[in-house]
Length: 323
Image 1 (cartoon, rainbow, N blue to C red):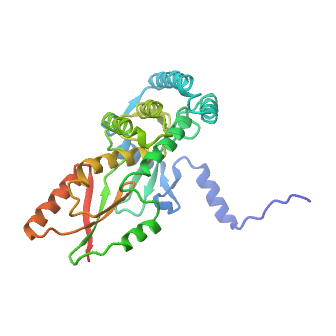
Image 2: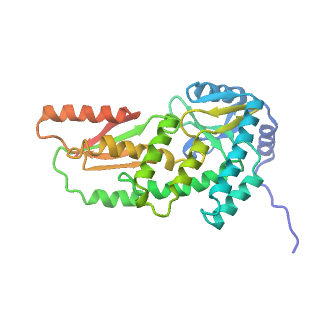
Image 3: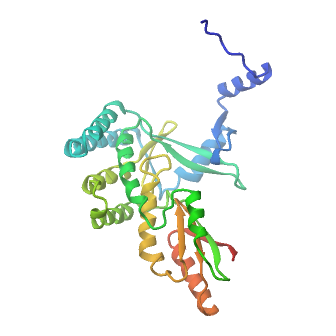
């Protein structure tokens, strides 16, 4: 058997164009949101939009010097080492070895990049932090698996569109019922870090008996370590995320899922039980059914109150249609 080099299906001028793009310092090939393929953008425009759209938001990000970033890295290494020494054997041999391996092999900072939302008018950018191979990646994966056990038990959770359809088919709805949707505005970055950690920790401690396979104490400590130390690079600059979490960073999405589920359990589902018999959420997209109140005046007031409660958590609510 003789290995042969495959023949390219590109024409010579197409191959030269791609090679020129790869060598260019002025152009970048970036990913588009929603798996819409690659896009070419001027490097200066890409950098400017990342800064303007995201990193220069002082409420969400803070720029660090290289010395500050290295200090964070040293502190994270120390705290992660102590965590493994404290909980490693209690979490099981496989988890212990997994965390030890990633601690020994991980040296790089996470990397920030943006995908392009070309389906939006005008186009926008989505912030993502690639954490694979970084110091807290292994711990984040473990936290993600633990939080998934909690997130999938929440009232608004559904596994797939097939399950959602089956659930909807079981409803016999009266005339005037309305389908509504809600979409969170920048869900990941708008989560207040310290209140979210507090609420999730309180929820886990209160419901610990419902999750016997979860080491709540270790999970809360690990979650706090991750959320308070999201340091990453963008080009040759260093940044700290001070609010919310980053898409692409475990334990997202179960972390925001649980935080919003707590709000739903406290403020939404009990208060609107008669009007909202069906409420489901997939990360930041809500789908539900609104049953009108007996009196039209009461219904208008209740609907407005429902929107106000949803919007207090940065949801934009809209009617899809009436049945």
